[in-house]
Amino acid sequence: MKAQIAVLIADDHPIFRKGLRQIIESDPSLKIVAEAEDGESALDLIRRCRPQVAVLDVDMPQKDGFVIAREVRESQLNVAVIFLTMHKDERLFNAALDLDIRGYVLKDGASSEIVSGIKAVAAGHTYVTPVLTDYLLNRRRNSAPAEQQTGLSSLTEAERRVLKLVAAYKSSKEIADELFISVRTVDRHRANIATKLDLRGSHALLQFALEHKSQL
Image (cartoon, rainbow, N blue to C red; front, side, top):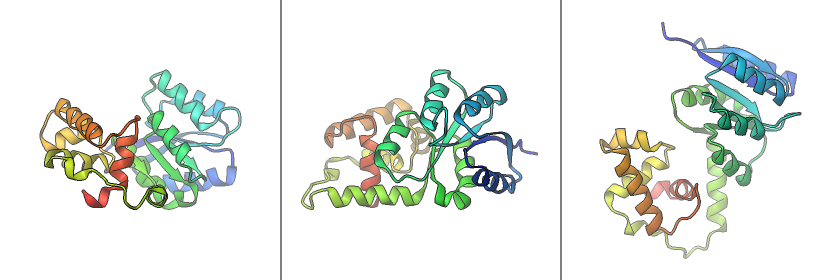
C-alpha cells in the first residue's frame, strides 16, 4: 500500500480550517499530521512533525506565510509549501515564486483544488490556481501595447519546446527527462530564449511563457 502524504495545515480561522481538514481527509492518500492557528505554531510543527506538504494561510498572526516560507528555505527543511490566499495579486504571486513556493491556491477555490494541489507539490510539481493564472495573463495582455512583437519567430523548434514546458511549470530536470536531453542543455536553451526575447528578472521567462502559451 502506498504511503500517505503527510500534511500540515495552518489558518487562523477555525471554521475554514475545519472545512479544509474535512476535504483533505476525505482522500485516503492524504493524512493531516499537524494543525496550527498561527504562524509561530505552524513553523514549530513543521520542524517537529516534518510534513511533506505545508498548507499555509498567507495572512496569519505572529508570523505570516511569507515569513514561514523564508525560514523553511533558510533552514533547508524538506517540505513543499502551498500558499492559501484571498488575493489575486501579481506582486504577492511573484514574491511567492521568489521563495520557491510550490503551490498557490485561492481560498474561494480551495474546496475543489486543494487535494490536487497537495498531490502535485508532493510529487515535485508546481500547482497554481487556474483562475489566478488566467487573471494575471489577462491583466498583462490588457496592459501590453497591441502592436508589441512577441519575438517567438526568433526561437528554434527546440527552444519553443522548452518554452512550452516552462509554461506547464516544469522544472529544468523535468524538461530534460521529457525531451531526453541533459539539464545543462535545457539551461542553455532557457538562457538563449531569455537573451533573444530580452527577458530580465528571475521569473520573466515563466511569465512570458504563460502569457504566450497558446502560441507555442
